[in-house]
Structures are given as structure tokens and as C-alpha cells.
Image 1 (cartoon, rainbow, N blue to C red):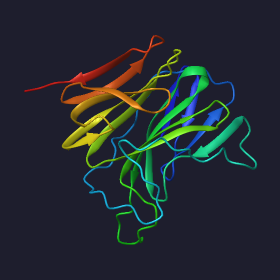
Image 2 (image 1 turned 60 degrees about the horizontal axis):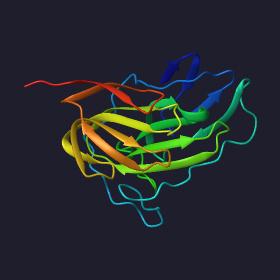
Image 3 (image 1 turned 45 degrees about the vertical axis):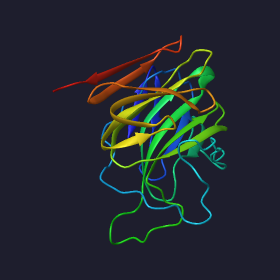
Image 4 (image 1 turned 180 degrees about the horizontal axis):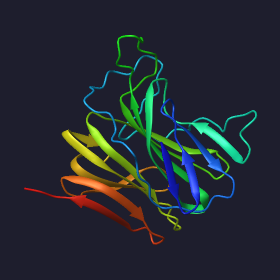
Length: 221
């Protein structure tokens, strides 16, 4: 999966979703995905030893930037997600060069591989400083979600906006159930502050310098 905005290129890999900050990058506010997130799974209880997560849980730290030799022109690299089949679906650059990423986490479902400890059916939203240091990570249980996108405001408030589509089952990002197309605002510390329905289906999102957001959605009867 590849994302391009304002001269910056991001590359996401399907397994554990590494995100790399490349040399000479510009600023970007919105993001898109090439394919919809997998759907139709049912969440299973977290195994013993897994940190609690989900609505109301405090943001947690993620992994540090990878050590060792990196490709030429790469400043840092880190991994987002858990020990399962993960798909990054959106990335955005916000205040001060922070990188925000959303990942769809999916437990291993095929018959050739055994389940692994720590795998989740969840949405992971993560924020990193320009040097790759983790600011926070939020995990939210999911059932049927699609078209997850993220936009980070470059303004002083550092707001983050998450959009997507919850069909058949509602989603909860800490503010109660939301269904159909939605947009959720998170503050700079990773706490959800408000959410809105944006039609039957949300298609795109962009954030501005003042902390506002524009969402393209679709409504039908």
C-alpha cells in the first residue's frame, strides 16, 4: 500500500504495518487507502497478559524506532499493529511533523496457521513524533468496519480525525455507539472529543490549520 501527499511518500506493508519517515518530506493533512479493510470477523477475548485496550482505556506507547541499518534516505522506521494479519489503511502528517497512522488488525483466520498470542480484531490509531518516538497508541475493538482513513491537523491544537464506515454492527471509539459513515475527533493526546454521522458512507477526509475538518460522504434512501 502506498500513500502520496505533498511530496511525501509513505509505504505500508501488510504484515505489522511498518511506517517509514522519508528524507526531504513535506507536510500533509489527509490520507486515502487503495482497498477496503477486511470485514466479517467476530472479536475474540484477549489472552492473558495482553494489556487492556479499547474505549476509555488510556493511550499506550508503541514500539521505538527500529535500530540497525536502514535504507538510504530513511530517517526512521517502526512497526504498528500486532502479531497477526494487519493492514495499514491511512497515514497523515500533522502538527510539527507528527505522523498519524491507522491500522486494521485481523487475527489469523486460515486453516494453515495457528492463532498467536496477542492477536486482536481491532482498529489501531497511533501517533509518532518527527524523530519516530511514539506519542500514543489507541486500540479499539472492531467488527465490520471499512474505508478507515485519518487526517491530522497541522494547527496548534494537533487534532486528529478518523473516518470510516460501520455497517451491520456499531463502532465505539469512547463516545458511545456510531454507525454508518462517521467522523471522530481526537485531541493531541489521543482522547476522543466528539463524533458525527456523515451519511450512509464516508469517502474522504481532510483537516485544516484551524482544526476544522471536511468529510465527503454519501447518503441514500
